[in-house]
Image 1 (cartoon, one colour):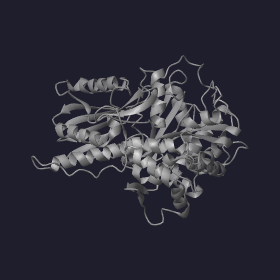
Image 2 (cartoon, rainbow, N blue to C red):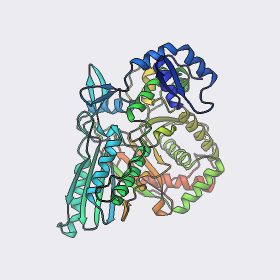
Image 3 (tube, rainbow, N blue to C red):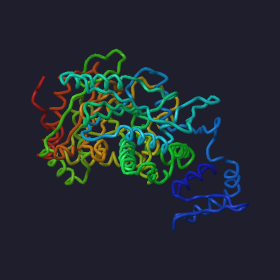
Length: 518
């Protein structure tokens, strides 16, 4: 049983367990699934009964600022991105692009109405961040509509139409978001022909991660299909109400600071007890660059045969394909630097509760995976170590790593980040979840942001449109690396993956690297 130190934290803890409290006159009532209200929870309710009744009696459902405008404390993700925006207001490294080629009879009016319905349902898409009485707050507008523009490129000569479409997309991608005044979603529809369009979504990271994007695309399909099928003058049947809004999720997060925090921090205390990890410095990196986040990207697609070999290796080692790709990446960093203390950042969706599944908004936590590659382990031993590290870190993912270091080392001033590279692996491919009636939808690859914060940012997934081939792109800071160097890194990575699958008894120091391509 977690330690709950405040009535507010207890209410939030009960809400996560789907236990509802309310007042019936002067009596405290509850509803819960069978077995959810354990003897320990009953004892807590009894001990805090009077405080809970006072809290429920005096607490409004949400604070209000003006007529119809709601306010709530921000999530850790919102606070993080707000702080970065104050430091770099014109940077665009948190713009996330997704582009889709649409072939068929598309109704642009219904598409706009579908996005408007999504914005009506999800408060976060009507939310800005404001400083109120010295505190950063979410401010939710009562209504909103999609920021969507339509560009007609049908009159462009065929030889230049693709260039013009790319110019418009890049211009949108280079436009920063302002979390204090505007939406964190922009939609651009490029009309190429009567039955051909490009749908371009530019999202701020504050609303974009795998689960959030999947929820957005699924709702877009449902609303568009409902509007399309509705009779004239008929209002489509709405989706059921959301079980929670993003502000409720932020309140959940805040309760972590007063609910069993010591137990959650124990794992990370061991992490920091090992000392600060040494910076990863490959021998081929360029001299320290001027402060810039400009990025390049190199795309890769490994063969379906290699992908199947890696999946067989993963089953043999009782790990996921994500763990196998991450282990190979850690081995690559080790081979380049000779440092056995390897730290790689990795996104954790943190959506284990059913109420978070349909929610649009980032619940993401970037976790610092710290791997010990000492004593030159063989491949199977490496996979076991990486699995253990990943499972332990994910068990403690509900505390944002960005909050851990200040809590454990509040006076420490760092000159270097705790990790310089992040690897993202899609267990599912949310960008393939967009389906519109009467329209063939194709995800457009090779449209990436041109600004990043990490030095290296590989993104990998299984591509269903390419027989399940392991696919991805590696973004890199141009001040540190160039395209030839990244091509060499990809060749070395592919060679490591191949050798790992062929002979997992090999030590990681004996795994061959690729042929020199630069």
